[in-house]
Length: 277
Ligand code: KIV
Ligand code: NA
Image (cartoon, rainbow, N blue to C red):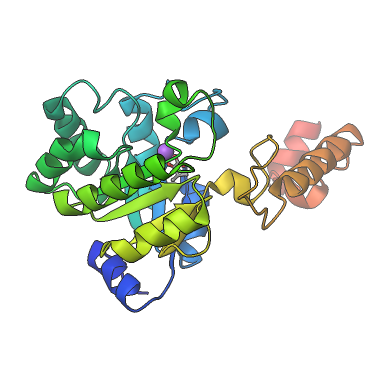
């Protein structure tokens, strides 16, 4: 299978072929996602919640994100690997943001970084593009804005908010962003932004009219231990599969039926005889 590249995403938009994206945080799941033919693997800062068990994304660090991005990078051969810039890694200054972004490319092999925000991040987007770091924007329900939003609620519902979102989206495109994630907004708003932009939009909780879709891997397979949001569809039940396997393992150890003879190593004849004397 030929490698997917960032320019391919643009082609897909123009040919109206949906872009498929998923998050992954480790080698095993990233391999499965890549081997399934998904176009883009995002090492999302959602790992703070689904992997680390924190109750928001705010506390995850650059070093933690780098660690997971390296694991994903080793697994992925075909898809584009995108690393999420965590909260605090690009908020103090543009220079610090560029420096941190370069670490994801240089130390972890990411092909692009994702940052949350619109017109408040234009200088950063321009400087990143200038530094040869492709950047994906993220608008709408941006989880790093938790405290400002006062919770995880759908954004872009008033005419004023819609206008702000549209301006953020076109500004990101003009600043040189490669694509933009649209999260948690009415489908009509996402449709409008998608039609307005020449760069692809990738939706999550933003309806079916985006140029692509992304989900959190753990939500897709029922491993997130939370009531799924309205926009989540559980395409499989890994929790049931894992529970059943763990339960069977435990039972068979208790019954001494695991490990069996065929699962044991043996000494040679002579050594066995000596040992049994
Ligand atoms: O962190 C994440 O998983 C994300 C996607 C849901 C877009 O930002
Ligand atoms: Na994220």
